[in-house]
Image (cartoon, rainbow, N blue to C red; front, side):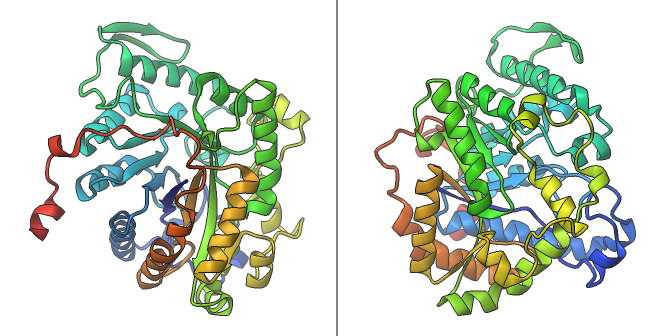
Length: 416
């Protein structure tokens, strides 16, 4: 199994009265709440944490893209990934991802991802999300009814730019380019592995099957609520004649490790309650623009976690906000190393997921606590899980250059 360290980069100093005073953490969060000097320290802490995760042996470090947002300070995950490409050695770099419909022209994604793949020596996982409605439709003004068409056209242009050896013209509905000829080109051939993060869209499942891409459910509400989505995914794969290779799928899970369950509860309660109380405080008017959810998804009755979060923010349902309920509902897995390993084995097996993305920093967790959580997981949990699904071939993992052909990175030179 691949164990991947995921970072959302949340703003860690939202005021205590944030939820009561401000309507949303996304789209129209007030600029007065952002302190650039404090964020300077946050960004550098976050990047230290990502580098530390690579240092202690996680299979990949993961970053993602959000806009106008107090819970995810990465409008450009490529900037972070390019730094990690120089400061890590063998760890895969999972960029989850670039929201393709927001790039004009999309060849910008092809170029920047190729740069990261070249700088890292072929360690990039290219994430291609459609993007949340808050990011795409409100912060960036895209028409929700055209979003998927834009996304698919951008995907086709990017993949062709990576793989076509000759300069070509592209004449799409949304993109017209007389000369497409990207430099640089990726190390990995025909291109870096493509993973598609999404909610519960039936069309996304089918498209991943058609294109042979990895589907990733980036759930904020844990394995218990996520079970229905993953069951739907695997049912769809069965209908389409695909095997149950667990590496076809990825899943995101919050985790807090301590010396005991009570110790972990005490350590991580504040950070978990900050995240679920503030970072998912979304105004319902931004959660479900008409045309964003597809007809097939609506017919299946699949509800996005964004809608869940917006309802919860306005007390229309009973999603958890206090630590006991957060843990009982499975949003965050808490316990000693043995307890966490046992729970994660059950999660991976029940959901049939071979790529487990772990949020070991969440909410307003400090750098020291994040490193403690990361170290304990790497040393005492990871070894108990690493051989799970070893009978399956992982066809969607990066294929880097031979280590003897790669450049030394500054960290290694300094260490010598």
